Each structure stands twice: as structure tokens, then as C-alpha cells.
Amino acid sequence: MNIKRIIGLICIVVGIGLLFYAGYGKERMASARQEISDTKVDQGLIPDNPITDPIKENIEQGIKAKYYRKVDSYEPLIQLLTIGGWILIGGGVILLIFGRNKKT
Image (cartoon, rainbow, N blue to C red; front, side, top):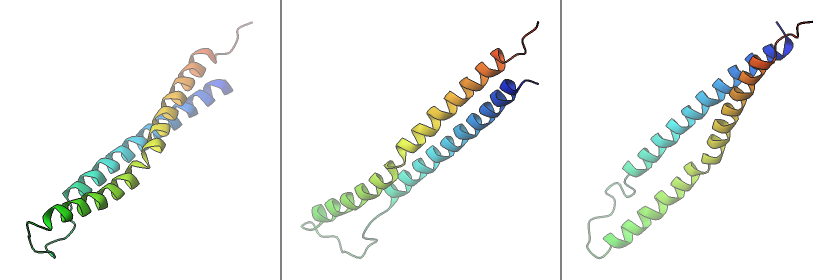
């Protein structure tokens, strides 16, 4: 087997691994977002009051926004993993197709 074809196979395997890892990261980000949206901040510590309820909602939204930003900070990495995986798979396929031995 030609060295170009071996490198092509390695690229395909690594690309598939990157895509699986990116999918896992997307799944974890979605579950983290869901967990943040389901969380109540005060947990019943502050009694219901029509005067303080809007303030409490603003505080809760601010705290949740902080955690959403933290989760969203991983989005560029996940996109790079996805793009890199597809590029490696495409390059590996090209090397497999065109990496044949030359017949003399």
C-alpha cells in the first residue's frame, strides 16, 4: 500500500473522530443550556411579592445570561472541530483516490 493511501486512511479516521467529538460537544452544550433554562435562581428563599418579582426576574435573567455566555464560549471550538473533521475526511478521500501507485 502506498504511503499516500495510508495517510489518506489516517486522515479519514481522524476526521471521523473529530466529527464524533464535535457532536458530543454539541450535545453537551444543548443539555447545559436546557439545565440553565430549567434552573430557578432563588429556590424559594425570597417570598412572592408583586413589588420585588420584576427585580427578581431581572436578577435571574442576568445570572442565567452569564452561564449562557460561558456555554456559548465553546461554540467556536465546536465549529472548528466540525470544519476540521470534514476537511480531513475530504483530504483523506482525495488521497485515497489519487494516491495510487504509478504504473510504468
